[in-house]
Length: 103
Image 1 (cartoon, helix red, strand yellow):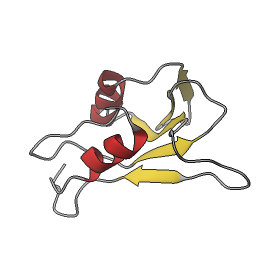
Image 2 (cartoon, helix red, strand yellow; image 1 turned 90 degrees about the horizontal axis):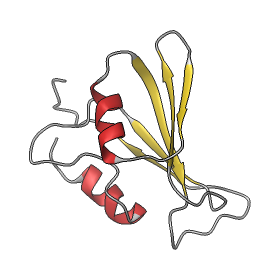
Image 3 (cartoon, rainbow, N blue to C red; image 1 turned 135 degrees about the vertical axis):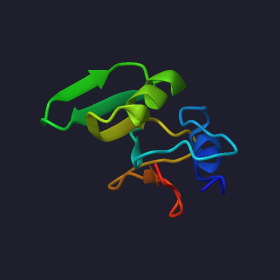
Image 4 (cartoon, rainbow, N blue to C red; image 1 turned 60 degrees about the horizontal axis):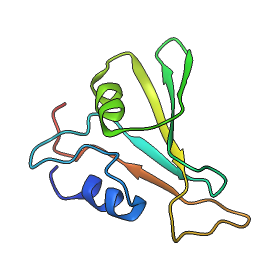
């Protein structure tokens, strides 16, 4: 917890999409998928009932709200991570809560 995982991923991605503070703030795993065909970051989420939702433009506020929601079971942020080129494989970064997180 508070070791800089979210901050490092934000730096790699080149955008402050993930919440990062000097305390626990990541409640569940969030995947960031590099897709060179996307012009901006999008959010794909699935709730506990299996209902899919899509948001065209990801923002830190959206990620924070989904992260806090007990109804969201899965979230993927998809967009181009500049400087990473995909050919046959795509990079997937996963931000996780710290092992000592009580959230």
